[in-house]
Length: 305
Image: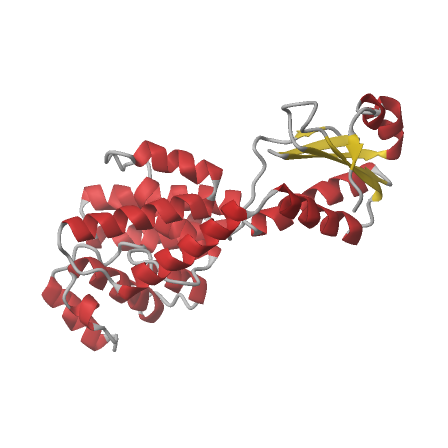
């Protein structure tokens, strides 16, 4: 992998100024980190990040010449906007000239400027990495970096909003793909925010039932504690089972854009997952009996499923 990345570094160098080259290195690193966090392929992310601006500093005439040579179909927006041309032609160049045929990498480069509806996780990762990379220093970038730690869709939505506002303020045309991406994310964020703790409870129940957790119990603690609204207790047959249950809960909730509020507290025998209003305790049955947490909350209301 290191050899391949080094090869792509050498390939992009002649095309870019020192500043743009460093930006590409930083985007590659940022994309790799986001991919690891949000479940995209880190190697693909690193490659797409490295190559995303390979055509950035060509002149409009060079872009149009390459478009003809590579048989790139350009729409009206792309023909008349240099910032859009480099992404479209860059994607085709790395396919036709560099021989990269992975559609996810090609699309990540192709849509890293406009975004689009139906973006893959890798496309989102490269789109976000481009504006939160280490070299970026514009006003508000730190807030965006913090959002990127919270959720990929959150920072994507913020980035799309900033893009639309900037272009509108400058009275520049906005590509329909950007509006489509924004509208899709707006509906998704709205739906996610409308989900109450019962949605999280039910999603966790589905996972625990499917993975054959033992004695799944839920209590409502919101009237007696500010820790959360609900505790879920579930048992595993072994430490391996406990870990598998916790991993699946995290994976399925992550698919819904829901991440734990903090890093899990865990041991081989007991894993705690904090989802704000819902806290999940997954133990081996021996550990569950030893600490008897359910007994400590005897004055609370048990939730019937």
